[in-house]
Image 1 (cartoon, rainbow, N blue to C red):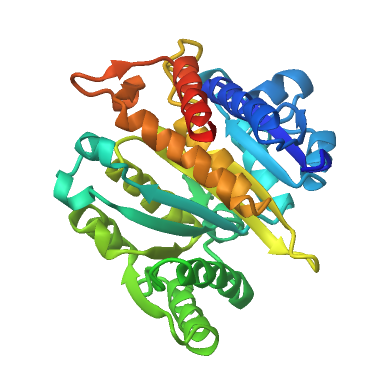
Image 2: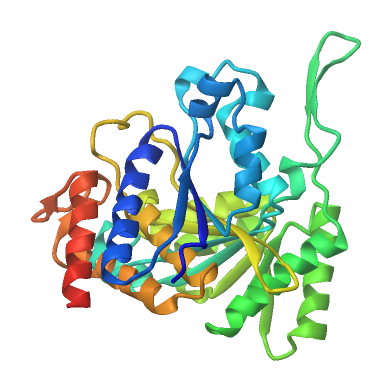
Length: 370
């Protein structure tokens, strides 16, 4: 592959730096063993960018991100930045990336590897073989709606305001992504909202229904209230195939789904923008876990979510399904061999550091590519 495939790496803060190092290891392996070469740039985001520039992401870095074929993102945040301004807090860098790149569709797979079925908080029979995909709308809803803010009322009380707002096209475009992905799976989509108490939920259900009936008539579309969906995820999770939902509910439901797999450290994600005339989409790939400041710098992080996010990049940004399959199979083989990081450690298994887990994955890749 020509070296003009531009990838921006943004390790961020905390364990983001550690897990990104293991992706760099895989990129080097792919370069040497598969002739898969990327033009890789690395820059600052989050607290690291705040310390260097006084903002969570610089305009220069943002320009590089917009003009890259894909962005690999680690994690941001830490207690040392708890008291900085809201608009320059580490998380503001992540939100700006999503907004300015128009990354409206967040893909969060929840797959329970057979080797980790006993690590789930649910019984093995409920999660063994689990393979669901949550498609979360990412650039609208309550996280971005206006008006927002904190104000002091006439009687001295303070009031915080956030606005949940969606338009027809915002809903339809994320639903189309969900239906497109479902066609390659079980062709079942469950649209999730709160139409019983929220007008935005009424609109969401109506528009999801319109897309299903008019553009994907062969798909099996169902609807569910968000609170019921959370309950069903921990009751009978394998009833789902693809779940599509808004920004707030998608944030919560994907974290619920993460515990079905055994650990947040196992969940990758992809965030996709609209396709241009050539079919290219801006995209960012990141693990679902945060910066985990309590274990940062100790070699305890689980890099598998970041590694699987890299595999998603290969699949969705570069149409390299065979290479993505290779990485995912290597992860599966490592787990089957009994190797674990602390977050997924079980009796009788071998405890590895973050670096050792990355080395184990590349060792499996050597075997698979032999």
